[in-house]
Length: 159
Image (spheres, rainbow, N blue to C red):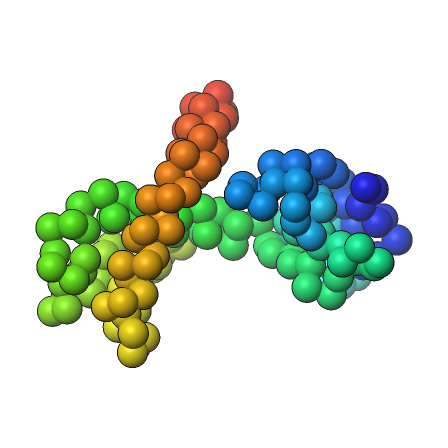
């Protein structure tokens, strides 16, 4: 299925077969494509690049398609990686976290730091963190494959 080019987001680089590789939803997803292109929020003289997940309902392109600035895509990747690393050792805590110290890490970015922590504002955190860990474990093969691919590409780029 071809990603539309007549909408405000202007695709430049696309993956139009994303539905075939969308993790456990592969071949049964409304996420039909990914693109990197010119952001829909661009103003005259100011151009930003964004990443977009294109969703198709079977009848039309969905308003739930997500568009993110590239730095947010990378911030999400950083968050996923740090979360994966955290859960390798979380078994050491009775509740899978330390209620007295919920901060997992502070990752320096742009002169400040992104705080990564367990969300204890969630009133069901003790139950939800166990479900989260189980789901993360169930998806280990899918996530691991993508992280290995990302690692290989980052090494090719010199990082």
